Image (cartoon, rainbow, N blue to C red; front, side, top):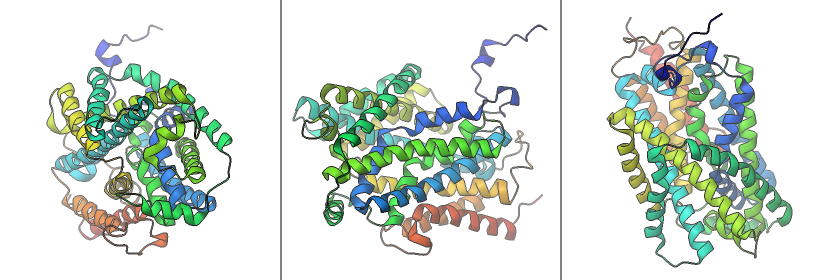
Length: 440
């Protein structure tokens, strides 16, 4: 039998505007490995350090991880199965749920979240270089310069750096595993840790179980909500998708635990992680620690800015490299303005702004079954779904008002505001669509 010859354009096709055929689907093990690579990032260490100081007790830390990871696994599994079943990417699903114009909002939310993460990593990169070389260059200016430098490879593509990230990730895991063994499990007193958390400036660390769980969820909520982008390449078996999601979140939880143990041992804030890794007073890894930190940050950050540029290009429709430069400069300004110090607030905004999007996807597919009936043809999408946008805004406000900014409303168990916004979007969207159904 002669194999059908494929055109070069077909070899580069990523099925962005059509379903991924079953012949191109991959095993759940393959996709689990991809998700592990995405989940093993430096920001998980940051979140672990914040939660360790904020809760002060390892038992509370573990419970917060369980709550946060359960939210993420549920979102990843349910949203991912939509992708596997339909074969469609998140932008196509968003076009159907929110309409063509409404989907622009989704692309903008995703792009801004990735730009924010780029700013966090660029500021941390600047601190790492500054600490190792002992320079006294103004940190805001240096953070901006580092952001611009980190952006450059993404202008030309990130394939080579993706390979480097697979090299850096195992070393990062080994280093941190060795670190917690060396440091041991002799923690500072709980009241001391909580006091440190409350004294962190400009934002205190989360000191309630619900807030800590929401911080865990917020750190990966974008990946969980857009998991259809990867799981559309999976065979549509729900148990396999949930298993892949659970394995990835276990890897993420490991890094969270490492961060908590290091912080609870030393009382060090997340911004001082370079000092903790490099300085002889703590782990004392010197140049090796410095190199691994740089590789892990740079490769992750180019992925951030590359993906944000793709999302923005869905709005502006221009040359990708131009969008990359504009996004990189904007993200570098975030770094200069101190987004690393405002990480807790950034994670809250991520949690309450991205979670309800996934809730509406889930409601459309599993409860209303609107997505199941649609063939995603050229005329499948409405111009704008005002009902979906209205529910999204209300759910965002519910999540925000229960997050402690500006005040806390304990209207759901544990006041887990990550859960509040998601469950609100599902309930409200279902109710609105039943009362005001689409016209045939």
